[in-house]
Image (cartoon, rainbow, N blue to C red; front, side, top):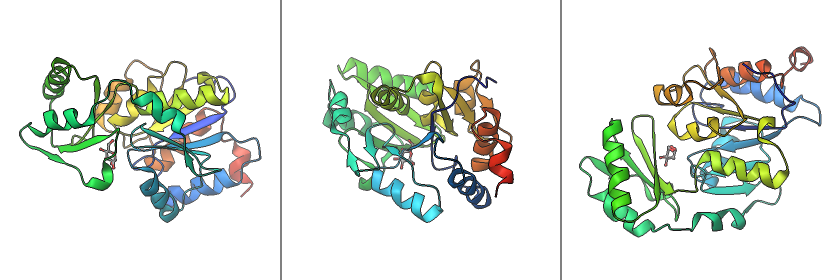
Length: 255
Ligand code: GLC
């Protein structure tokens, strides 16, 4: 575990990471809201699309972030003016053909499309229960052989996202850091499933895998110095943020 440089940005997944243990959410919000003006920027990075993400944040009682990364790193919104950043979306267009991707994936046995609300131009999402690593590799080869540049991300032994190669949570985070002039070793990321792995693998970032993290994330971060929290969901996030010096004891006793 590295305490490292002062943390200027915290980028967290929502479901199963900051959300999922109501008491810990209340505690997280109390600590976050009580931190002074120079607290790190907060970003939520989720598989949900933006409107859906905002709804769960409101309903779950989480603090509002400065940025949202939605659709597994396929959309970025700056909360201040509520606009999806088109400059980011343009990066995703290169060599992406959603119609062809769908045609190929649809043919796989046992696969089922997620609801329309989960789909968008740069996110083709499916349910595929208990797919093995070989199944995923086979899909990767099929896409490649068809001349498609696409990225296969599998989470929770169920959710399959096929995205442009340039889109994932890690790349979206890098893009925001570059835009804001924040270096990657000033960022902390938090997550629990496979679609979070790309954030943990961004060079220099410090990671917090919450206590309820799925084996697929633990496997992906093996060999990194991510903080493997004991606490579940937001309790694990709080634990990790303490370990990285973002939350000091004064933030807690001041309540
Ligand atoms: C969220 C999204 C879903 C996606 C999953 C994994 O649950 O709603 O579409 O497949 O995250 O990224």
